[in-house]
Amino acid sequence: MSARTFLLPDLGEGLTEAEIVRWLVAEGDVITVDQPVAEVETAKAVVEVPSPHAGRVTTRHAAEGSTLDVGAPLITVAAPDAADTYREEERAGSGNVLIGYGTSPTADSGRRRRPRGRDTAAVAPAPASRPVPPNRPAAAPLVLSPLVRRLARENGVDLSGLHGTGPGGVITRRDVESATRTPEPTTSAAGERRVPLSGFRKAVSAVLTRSRAEIPEATVWVDVDATALWELRERTRDDAGSPGLMAYVARFVVAGLREYPVFNARLDTERQEIVELPGVNLGLAVQTDRGLVVPAVMGAQAMTTTRLDAAIRDVTARARRGESTPAELTAGTFTLNNYGAFRVDGSAAIINHPQVAMLGLGRVIDRPWVVAGALAVRKIAQLSFVFDHRVCDGGAAAGFLRSVADAMEDPPSALARL
Image 1 (cartoon, rainbow, N blue to C red):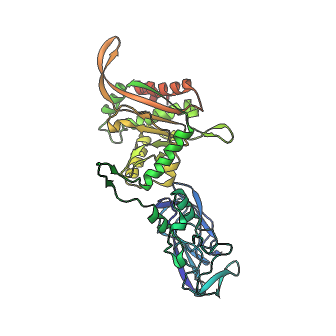
Image 2 (cartoon, rainbow, N blue to C red):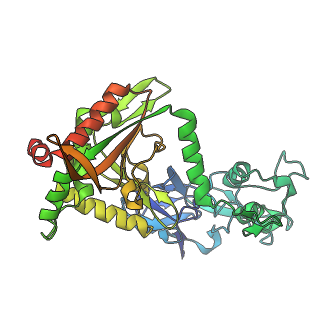
Image 3 (spheres, one colour):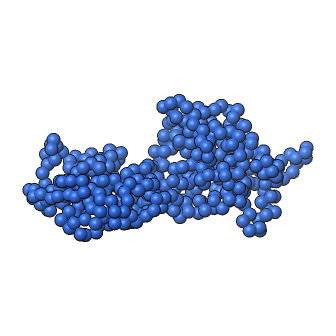
């Protein structure tokens, strides 16, 4: 018997980690080649991961709910040496594959695997040269992984023009990536500089383009006298665990969503229904070295202001370190964006599809303001609210915005009601 450890494969799309959602096999189970062993969730989707080994499962290397990096041990399988079915990148045959591994033999192995039973895999002699798959024209590009085909299609790569570097001339993921790789920024004779889009920026572009194409956005805004909120924060600044301004605003947003649940929702276009969600996963726009990401504070509706403050600090700090989990990056139901961090007053933002609304907070600055008929210097901030006009009209949007604004202008009264 020989033990083979299967590492979490490259799941494509530039993702570097995945969360174990559910194990599909137990330790001691006997599995076959390409049998799904786990469901994993990435920032893109939940997928089944098939095993490239046949044999008995000896070790599951992670618990359900844990997050693994690509290349980390996933599962160890013990199998007879003669039934070693480990496969190198892109050697696919069954079609049940992910980028990074496949099921076909190496070109120089001289052997071809054929399932003989449920629990073992037998080998049989085959010609040393790689046969052309049935019904495939000899001149057709040799691509066995469906995800490699998708990668080429999404990037506009003509597979017939590529030279495969995999076993037997198979076109691999790296071949497609090489064809899509853009040269370093160049400067033309006229001084024009061209900078290629990174994979991350391409993904962001796709999401934002879809949002603008599908969602009829409308924006409303209001200036808020945040002096009372500012003073509340200043009075408690030195206290251990004292909440910051964003925590208070987040608490008021959650209260506003309880009053106007249409903004904590999804639009089911197929069934033509507005789906109001039971909990608030509060998305926070965070600028990182890679770009803007929107991780979510999960279950924000059940948190006190102090707990929200701790959660916001944790989520944003891990996002800047690139440690957000796939669930955090995809589970948001409503987004709060602090434009003030960039010293600007507001923005006509693009909704984070498939959400239906976003609230932005501008910088808090001293401005002249009329209080009880007299001119005074007050701490003023602008709130800007963008919403999907399909789910409601301006009256509901104005009501939600005023709910948050009123709470910021009189925080003691607002907190007493929560």
